[in-house]
Structures are given as C-alpha cells and as structure tokens.
Length: 257
Ligand code: COA
Image (cartoon, rainbow, N blue to C red; front, side, top):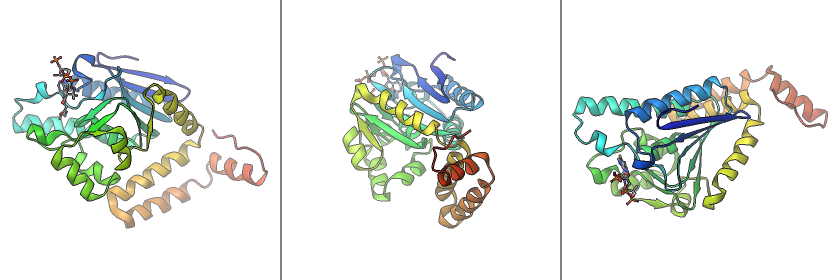
C-alpha cells in the first residue's frame, strides 16, 4: 500500500511502514501525519504482529516535524498539531503487536518521539538521535517529555531536552535510548530477523505483556500490578497458553496460532 509520503508493506505478519519524503529528510507535515495514522490503522487491520517504522533513503529516519510548515503557527494551530502528533504516539503505544523503530539516520524532534513511542529501537551506525526542539525555541510536543522518562534516568532526560543534544548511535546506546546498534547495511536484515522471531511468538501473550509493561508507565507500579494480574490470568484458557504448556510437558515444540 502506498500514499503520497508513506508506504506500507505487509508480509508474513510483519508490517513495514516507511516515511518517504526525501526532499525534507522525511520531516512530517500534516499530510504525512495523516498518512502515517492511516498506515498504522491498515497494519492493524492486516493483523500484523510486528510493525517496523523506518525512513526512506540512507540519511534520515525522520528529521522531525516540518519546521517550515509550522513556523508561523498560532497557539491554537500548534495545539491542534500537538494533538495530531500525540495521536500517532498513542497509536504506536497501543498497537496490538510489537513496534520496532529501525533508525536508519537522523531522528530528531517528532522523529525521535515516534521512535521513543515504539516498543523497541534498533539504530544503524549512521543514526543521530535527539530532542532538538530547544534550539528552535520550543520543547518536545509529541510526547518526548514523557516518553524519554520511560527509557532513561530523569537526569539524562533533562539533559537531552535542555541541551538539545544530537547523539550518535553509540552514545544513544550507552544512554539507553536504543537497544542495539548495527552496521548500516545490516539494519533491515537485523530488524527483519527480530520481527520474524517476534511474529512466531503467541500473539495474545505478547499483546498482554505489552499492555502490562505499558501500564507501569501510565499508572505507576501499583496500577501496573493490577493490569499485569488481570492480563496474566486472562491468558489462561487461550489456545496458545494450553498449547505452550502442553508442548513443554510433552517435550515438543509448541505450535502457536
Ligand atoms: N523540517 C522541514 N524541513 C527539513 C527538516 C525539518 N525538520 N529537516 C530537514 N529539512 C529539509 C531542509 O530544509 C532541506 O531542505 P532544502 O533542500 O529545501 O533546503 C533538506 O531537508 C535537507 O536538509 P539540510 O539541512 O540541507 O541537510 P543537512 O544534511 O545539512 O542537515 C539535518 C540535516 C537533519 C542535520 C538538518 O536538516 C536539521 O538539523 N534539521 C532540523 C532537525 C530538527 O531540529 N528537527 C526537529 C523539528 S521539531
């Protein structure tokens, strides 16, 4: 499937959403945001178990919100734009499969926020990542102030946002922003391998795990424990749970739905 600035490929339960606006290093205007939202919805209707988010070309993942487009925004216009970007952050957080950001180059501002909203992040050695808004006279508005706190200590989050640092891949790895750094040419092979393995896991259990992990950040530890208890017990009786445990006891490999 393809739109003007976004493409979506789905095969073997894995969807790959590529932001493709090369002239602006994949920076996002409202058309791109609408298309990303539609592509995520399409991946969900295709029942994708894994959604990979990446940028077209060798230079950029997503160079942020389109600065040229928003430079004259009034406050109400900016608020509407923040709501739009945050809507996509929410779509990624709530996507019923695992989301992986394959960070192939610049990931700044809103691009960094979309990567942070994914479950997992893999960076190519060429990735450069940062919440760079401070030098534009603004702050992160698509979830960055909240999402960074899920991944890195408060001190690191404050430094990244206050200084607007642009971290190279190894720095991003050391500070806990990405889980893996791989050679640029190996990025998609590596991410595809991860995606294939995740797609072979029991779907409902993976989704329940994601919801329970997310609950920690949304409701704090106690609320999260309640969600975890409910999700854990709700999996008993599902075909995958019965199969997974029977296979263990019968000393064979499980065959999940
Ligand atoms: N919004 C709009 N256009 C952008 C953009 C953005 N966030 N990021 C890059 N572009 C455009 C540039 O304006 C330029 O367009 P032009 O060719 O019509 O002049 C094109 O993409 C290439 O960018 P350029 O700056 O010439 O390339 P570069 O290799 O020298 O630098 C970056 C690349 C990403 C380091 C630099 O473009 C940059 O810092 N971008 C802003 C990143 C940012 O702060 N994002 C957060 C926004 S909230």
